[in-house]
Image (cartoon, rainbow, N blue to C red; front, top):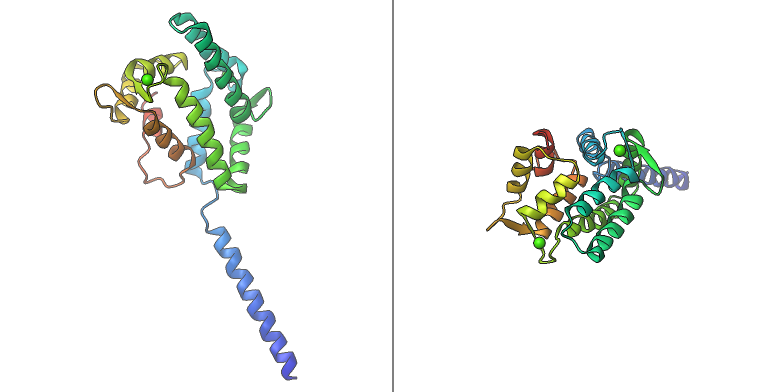
Length: 209
Ligand SMILES: [Ca+2]
Ligand SMILES: [Ca+2]
């Protein structure tokens, strides 16, 4: 009888412990909330450079042709930028498909985020670092206003006031800010579920960037 009571007691403790573990898994903050999903949707819209409601290689080709038409990058530099942008676009944005709709894009990010937030954040760091580094045309680890505007115009964002507001949000000193500042801002924006954290990227999109 005593053995039976111990056994029941043991099973109850075990059950209680597993309930606590499942509650703590629920609360580890790795669920994508509405706020984060809306940011990913805005990000999709901002990347749809040709406005045809899908993301494809056509969007990035528009971006690359803009740089080509500017004419001040050497063929070698241009080739290097295109190689990097094509690679990150195929891997991170298109998830190795030919084109992706907004619903599929959000679902793809949601699955990756919820299966492992740390792996997701590292993937974002790789994408965002590569993207921001391609903006630094003279390789001095700073983004000047000219480099910034060249990139946003190439991305078909040319609302001057909103572009300038976003540039100022990175707190430039003597007309430039470190590439690292932009990388850190964007990673936070792409991964943070807390609505009260300041988000310069989201503010810019809201003001028409
Ligand atoms: Ca498109
Ligand atoms: Ca630079």
